[in-house]
Amino acid sequence: MSRSGLSRRALIAGAGAAVVGWNTAARAWSAEPGAQVAELPALDGAVTLRGEGLERFSGDFGHLVTAAPRAVLRPGSVRDVQKVVAFARRHRIPVAVNGQSGDAAVLGAAGLESHSNYGQANPRGGIAVDARGLGRIVSVKPGEAVVEAGATWAQLVDAGLALGWVPPVLTDYLHLSVGGTLSVGGIGGAVQHHGLQSDTVRELEVVTGTGELVTASRTRNRELFEAVLAGGGQAGLIVRATLALVPAPARSTVFTLAYDDLDAYLADQEKVLADGRFDLQVGNVVRSADGGRWRYTAELVAYGEAGRPVDREALLAGLAPVAGETAVVEQSWREYAFRVDAFAGYLRSAGLWGLAKPWLSLFLPASSVGVFMREAAESLTAGDLGAGLLLFYPYARERVRTPLAVLPEGRVGWHFDLLAFPAPGADVPAMLERNRRLYERAVALGGKRYLIGAVPGMTGADWQAHYGGLWERVERAKRRFDPAGILTPGQGIHGA
Image (cartoon, rainbow, N blue to C red; front, side):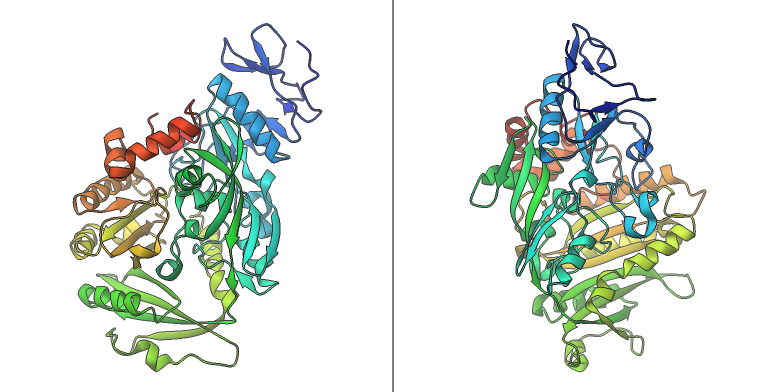
């Protein structure tokens, strides 16, 4: 077999041995040609089997699942993704995109990792696609940006700010890949006004499980468009996105309100949601100063222009937090947007960033959220949270228009996001069992899960119940756009 199909950068294995292709009989990469070796196509980038940085692709941010891929594609072009996916389809090799995001500007390569939490982006021994090979901000103009999937929201924010435009919805931590968050939905404090990040997408370029490059939007190839957004990477791999932008505010006035009474907290948060008086609305469950109980804090943000303070009295009218404990901070819009960077730096310096993190992310209907939260508060301890956060805030169901972003019934829902950073020596298996119990209780109360987080033991029946009436639609999209079933097996939605 001729090696003419290999580019000069094609494959590297060990100490410079060029890999010719895939041995179909042994189901392994081969450095020698032969009758049973399927030759890889010429590539603009490279596929690595061992060596530089490959260990980053064996685990992820959660440090709960480890499974080394057979190979890593570092694409030099979208064509590389197409070629490798088409090759993988022919030979039934799993493929998943790995965001490899993080604060590389500060930390360099040491800051890069998959930001899935429970092996969702792991190809289970197949081919990991390093999204950093497709990490450009293609263009930014008033009202719109075009970015490659491996670019981070942090990159887009700074590129947009230079022109006075920013994304309408941001995650709390901005050093995440655009393609990664769009594949799960992408939630943040502006969901009450703009929906999920996936709701701000105007157009996508997607490589399907057959290796075809398809442009999709709400008016063009809509079935694929809706199957990919919040679809967990099951129907296609996002390689480029056209996103809406909004004018950048100058200032953020951040109000932090404390509550000891859950009912008062729920009522005030839903009041703020209903009248839309704040631009961002989140909340946390925190330990009291004496460490003896849980408290609730609403973090509410009003945007303003430089030199024009917001009307604090009007914004707080009719709310009933604990008297004398409301804090107000003025920041630039960018300072607030990047607020989590300092916290992440602390976690790294404390040695907690690289430990196991059994996160749990749920959506609860307003009708039963009080029951769930009271039960959760009784069972959770300070050790369950560690140095982390428990986000807890409402959203308006009508603002979320992404079909596969599965949410509970009801006009108002609540996001429960246990972002634990346990101390060294924590009983992680017990915490995973806790996640399963809380998930099952949420489902019994009409809740749903977010595709991030660690819920052990998800079965086919669990996934069918999760999607409910959408299940046939999900399966149909899988059959049509990924007929060999190779894409993103780590989600486990369609079986092992």
